[in-house]
Length: 116
Image 1: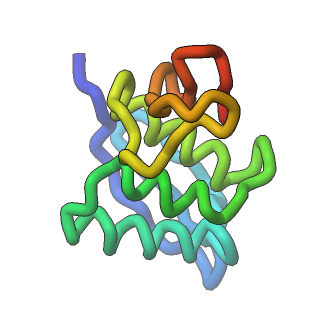
Image 2: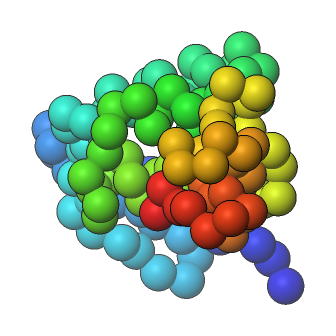
């Protein structure tokens, strides 16, 4: 089973794209603007510079995203790639001052505090 679908993204007009494959077509995909475009460019640069994933997440978290926003969802998705990894030494629980960890897409303390 393949993990991806081969296809091509074709510009339909100034603001829309179509994804075309042998089996289906997704029409009128909008060009991203604003926050999504800025974050995509920033992440592309960070990943090409081999910035560690936990540092990328820390940068995104400094934006103080609103729950459910594009940035918040992006942090949750990226966090799944660094499960059970300790955060930097300077990231301590605000309640008990223990080291924080990434688990199940959240930054948590072993004593129960969570940033999710």
